[in-house]
Image (cartoon, rainbow, N blue to C red):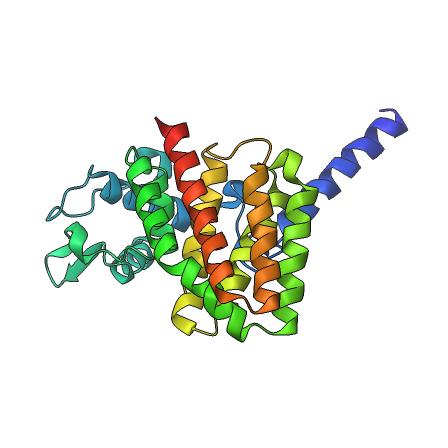
Length: 266
């Protein structure tokens, strides 16, 4: 066998081993945990299968969780128990002795759970979910911007400004990972800068909404120039301490996003 062929095969083997040693979970630029779809474990796949089944109504309220699909093989009792516990923590199922896990009515679900949001955005009812999320954002983010004008620190100012600069830098490719991360960082920072822990806790929800918009191709390739300008204005108004102007600019941002997504889903 030629020497160069042997060396090439050895290189491929070492590359494969290196890939296997990579951690399944990494972090994005906003410091949030991410997990590539290809690295999904059996636990993740079963969670997604059952979760989507509940969210879409394929498994109706009062029904027991079905057997895993044939694609998943035969998950161990430990895996099914762990997945059931996760669903229970989301309010999607109730677990009772002898009755097992049964699906709860929608009123008992935790609508703020980022995973439930992602499942809803992957469902046929995506337009409704997006509009509801936009309604939540318009009720919270303008007020957060107003509070940030009073409470933001110099570090907050710096992060907001850098995030807007990055958004502008990647605005010709607004569907890119870099633009999305800058956008998420801007909104997370704004919520945190409000100094209201209740608002700051909504960062994952806003991040899931922005990520869903990009993943489902509801973001234009080139960012809306007015939306970019308003992001820059919010950062400037927060730094100047102009709460009313920051509130109005943020309200315009969220309304523009809702209108754009509505048009693209019609």
